[in-house]
Image (tube, rainbow, N blue to C red; front, side, top):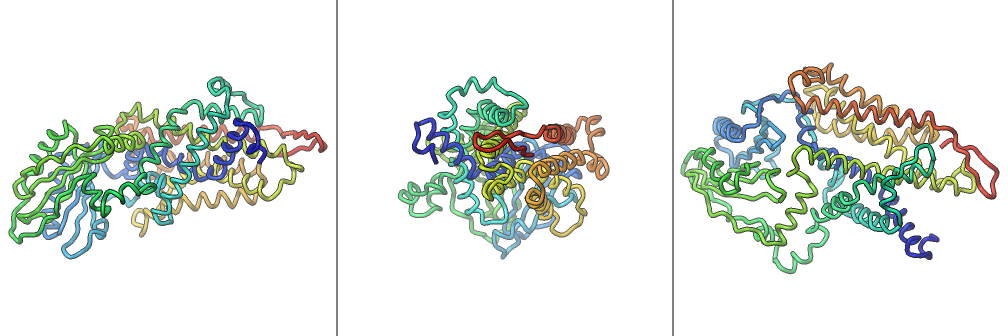
Length: 521
């Protein structure tokens, strides 16, 4: 608490330390899952090896409507998720007459890149890691978003206080000394922070912007009588249609897509929703897909389903709304081409390393200040074990999630749920192991297990599918080849970390009032 009563830099150092530590374990998971989310579509494709073909928006739309007209002619609504810029599958949903909108997700089928129904393994794909980034899991979504927002605010405080604390922040960029114990962890923390400082500030602030209406709803509630009225003004909406009872087939969807492309400057639709298909009053709503512009909020067009006549294009958004949409787009990075996407990934990975090294640095600094470093108090031991389970156990959780996709029986009930359970079982098991072993053995065991698990992924992939590394390289299937190569690279990095911990000499802690003691952490 001394930092509170010191100068500005001492106060900021105290604030930086505790703002980072109190939410550090959750921030690490948020950063790690957010990092993987930049390749959400590629992860989904790897987790559905049965789906092949090419991305063809118009063909996919026509084949989807053909299937729905043939198999679900009396439904109240049809919905089609079209392939994104980096995906090839279409997902169809329908709401049978008389059921609520909630039932939509219970009635679904997937079409491959040729527009043909495909029986693929049930999986949650990359969607789990994406939603875990801001919705967490096993808890109500609103609670999770408040918790994530709380952590993001602490992160923003830690970034600002960290900049004030480090008087030689740009000199830190060129400093990384290996094998110096606490000094090395501080160098690694500074380097990972400075390396992508603008990105860290941008991603944290825009992350808060994505949920600004949840955290600060007062402007909306003062200006609008209901949330629906606000949504109608902000995003545009027309009165819902009423079924006429007169049959009329859906007009050619290709012509509606052509009109939408013209209205959006060439951008493609990403989602199509049809209310009362086959009825003369049916309505087609077409949502612009992500990735064709920096703005994230989807633009919508409406058509008469029976005639294909396009309704007037909604008015352009105001400056504030457009700014919010662009900031959300900056955060999500869906607009980014592959090279920029990898830059997003690497900067976000640096953020994950920054949080991890900050957590380790806390224990490294405080151990030497303890009255008896060999017998730390319960608070220190708790932080140390949580650090081990978070930093070394989280990679194991990721690897087990991917391995579950390949190893669980293909027709298993609740298969997508068990892919997620595998993630949390591995992470929870890591905490148990970290509590049972000494710190040094805990680090070694979990880092070695994470290394083995990531190395096993390409092997299991080769044993269970025909789209493993070698044929993928030979056929130029870069999504599958890239995934396996990334797993190998992660296994190599974790193996190097395991070797460094194994070779690390025993640390000698020298204190002014205590005899020299050897500690193993």
